[in-house]
Amino acid sequence: MPTEGVVVIVTRIPSIPGATSDESDIEDDESTTLFSRDSGFQTRADSYMVFSFSDFDDLVSVCHALIPYQINASLFYYKNRYELLIADALDSERWQLIASILSEYGSVSNSTEAMLKEYGKTVIREHAVEAIVQRFSL
Image 1 (cartoon, helix red, strand yellow):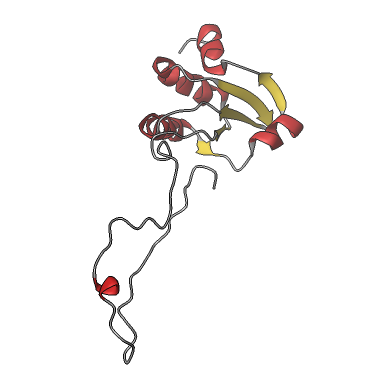
Image 2 (cartoon, rainbow, N blue to C red; image 1 turned 90 degrees about the horizontal axis):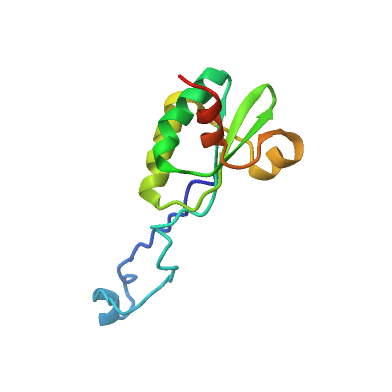
């Protein structure tokens, strides 16, 4: 799942019965860092998302809804469906907003960027949303 992250759950277990009690086990040491991550991890989504549309009219409608967000997308035709690939670096709020708009008209695709570029037919290489809005009215 390329849009999903990794969740790490750390559970602190009390001392084993019979073992000596160590105060560091009881205290919550804020200075100890188990994992470090890039400070932009939660605010940037540098991956891609692919949405699939079986009906071209749905694709035109979603492009008209996405035009205010100025995203760069590519359009492919793969397995009798239109696949819209969005590979912009978006903050997580915009990423979720755009994904929710796309899901109203289409469905999340299992296709990967590499698969579409290799096996799909490229319809519009760059700025697909703007190109569709310019050529097709609602």
